[in-house]
Amino acid sequence: MVAAEVTAGVAAESAPVEFTAFHPTHKADPYAVYQRVREARPLCPFMLGDIPVTVLTRYADCEAVLQSDDWVHGYDAGISPFRDGAASAPRSFLRMDPPDHTRLRGLVNKAFTPRIVNQMAPGIQALADRLVDDALATGSLDVISGYAALIASATLGHLLGVPDDVGASLRGWALAIARGTDPDNLLTEAELVARRQATQDFQAYFEELIAQRRANPTDDLISRMAAARDRDDALSELELLGVSSLLVVAGMETSINYVGSAVLSLLRHPDQLALLRARPELLPSAVEEVLRYDPPTQFTMRTACRRTELAGHTFARGDGVLLVSAAAGRDPAAFTDPDRFDITRYHGPRPARRHLGFSVGIHFCLGAPLARIEAAAAIGALVRRTTTLELAVDEAELVYLPSLIHRALATLPVRVR
Ligand code: HEM
Image (cartoon, rainbow, N blue to C red; front, side, top):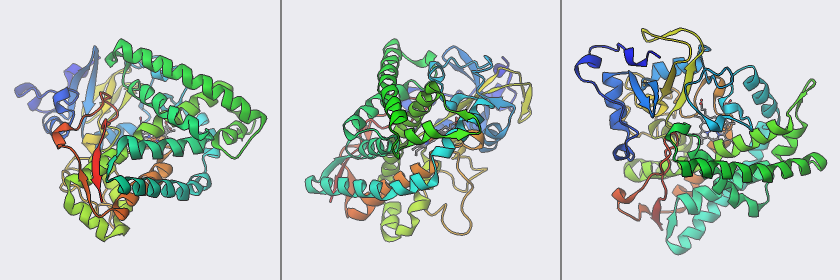
């Protein structure tokens, strides 16, 4: 492992800036650390628990790694330095490499069509509108548990064909499994146990649902995935289980945290909230700007599968990197005035450069079209149906969950009128 030998400019020897973003004191605002590290040590050696890795904070470096086939997950080949129990059975293709990733993603793509996603839009909007109206009746709302979580569980429940009463359990499972997507060596024993339990409960429920849908197919995604074929190929029982669990894990907490981040960003920038109220056509651009400015997924991991160069540094096979896409979104080399939250950035004929909030390359978020619909419905309803939207607690009281990959507000109480 050569991460410690990084020679990124003179700053490495004179002022050893450390990557301290995971320290609890930086939880509320990791962006100042990202900036310091990006400026002083863009390829920054870091001990992830006991695993030496290199942290990447520049847009160009993150984008290059995500798009290069020199970088993989490496769990299948046994070369990943990240010990990751979440990558084991039932297999999910989020952390697989080609050719397995290509095959599974292709089969799921056949079932997860734009038509299915677009058909869901009116129902998602109606739910968001109803939840805001309910909140207006009382004047208060927890944006996380009383809004975003209900929209995300109903959406995923509907997509997968899970009955409404089980939809609520989806969130509990997703929460435990989402914390468990951080590298295993950073989890407590209790968190590992919670992940194991949630995975078992989830599997038991979905095994039965999959068997039912195989026997009596309906129009939901599980029935379609069970039927999806590519020549002689089809998803095995275990693969179907893996994909169902991936969709819940990848689609639930991300969407919930997205709404928390979007609402908080608008509350912190009243001029942008007023602008969105005045110009609703900016909503799609506002949705993208949140993914650049304060994305729910802060970083991802990759491993070099051969000796390779990046920004003048040589990595050996098996070296791991943390790509901090949230830091890349604030890179002044990629975005003008990057610390400004500007909901017009992605509007008009010359939108800003694409953000990395949904990643790029072969693992680009498969659920991005659905995520965009959910995001626009949730933000749109709150902005359109209220005239007052304000934080109901002191900002200093806001608490983030311990997850590192996911940037997750525990609650976000607001007053609405
Ligand atoms: C705002 C909400 C969302 C965000 C920010 C988000 C973000 C991401 C990111 C960053 C990745 C790639 C990670 C990497 O490269 O290592 C990803 C992958 C993925 N996402 Fe999303 N996601 C969101 C919502 C959803 C939804 C709603 C679904 C499905 C229902 C979904 C399904 C997936 C799947 C299946 C993958 C794996 C793709 C692959 O490995 O080929 N996501 N997502």
